[in-house]
Image 1: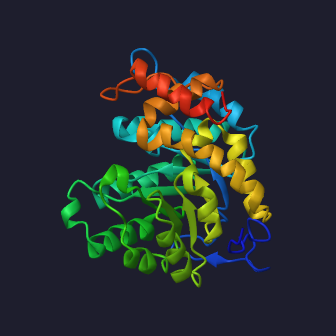
Image 2: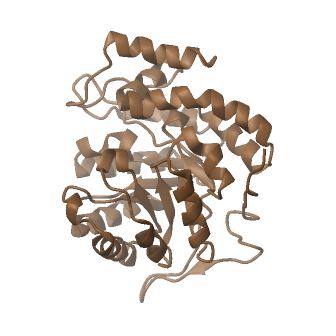
Length: 328
């Protein structure tokens, strides 16, 4: 199987043998440009029966995730049900995760809001709570007006003021809006924008983004386990994968196979991950992810309303999707 060579840096702090440094405007201190390469689970938020955040169960999940060779965790992403949490809850979850997360693992915190002003403010709070990087989703309520000009201005203002590096987040299945290619290319030139999490699944787009930003040290992360191997083939450096909440070791193994060029073994594993991944993402969503977590020894539990639990028929379908590929 012919795939493009997967490029990885010599170490998290080196690029081609050199330290790549970006400078913050004016009073901000210089910082080393981070290597994002690797696998990240966008962690779920457990709730109590009264729909309060269950910090004890979250802590227990974190202790298990700490034993898996993830590059880091994404906190308050789509699978964390961030739209249903208050700002205070979002920040407190990040603060709690930071206390439990080993220092060699990155904490990427979702700080996107609908307005630029609110995103700037929440980004500062996430950094103060311990985020190493912020993941900023495209604002989308007024999606008809979110053209390249608006989005470039939005992300530029956020990156200008952010105390930590920014990763762009394009998730058209949830927002109805794909971050335009021309906007990504222009934003890649910003010294405080590290990369993009692309959940759209268009491999030709991911490859083109890698190609058009190759002089900018811009890093692309696949937004789903279903196309992780294909994304590595065209130059992605890792993945933020919902399925990693359930099959984290297996996703890290797929990463290892891709990075080492063992494509035939990677192909076999990738194919076995497609159905369970689809089940916990586009088919059945976060309720299915949380149910699968329970089967695999993690705390998933119920979602916060108005998300509903799976029906019996959906739960049976979910079990079939995991069982048919030998995971259950």
